[in-house]
Image (cartoon, rainbow, N blue to C red):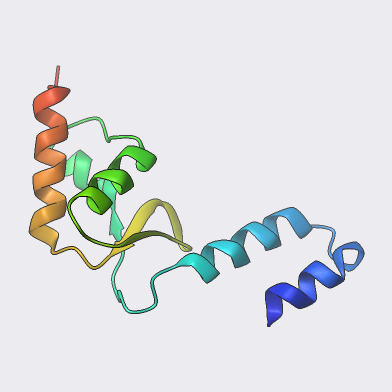
Length: 100
């Protein structure tokens, strides 16, 4: 495994912290969810301030779905939730935090 090799040779990687963080994110990513959703872009479509990512991920989990960060975009998630559920969660966020 690449992550184990990197951890065993910390001194060989000047950017160890960044490499380790990326490899950890990739390891935690849902492999059976082929798409990622940029929550900030979705929020901008609704002209709203995006919710904090931890709160949004928690809402997806509480709705009964799996969710993980996307390694390619820190503002995105990968999930097995239908897209309509993500839009519903954002609409609920907007109800509690109206657009000014």
